[in-house]
Image (cartoon, rainbow, N blue to C red; front, side, top):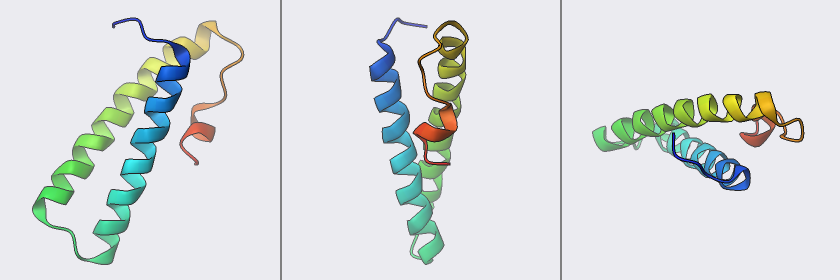
Length: 73
């Protein structure tokens, strides 16, 4: 995996979580198109990738907040 700064990883996680929440709102509203469902699936996969990368970093750095706090869960 390419090296990125931890704060960049945190910001990316938060941005992806925000996008997922937004897309889930669209889906819940009943106004989602097929593209919205595909986008949501793509963003969820990105979140999984980011969580795996974060878990690796969290094993070596004690000052990172828990992943769930970053995503608002």
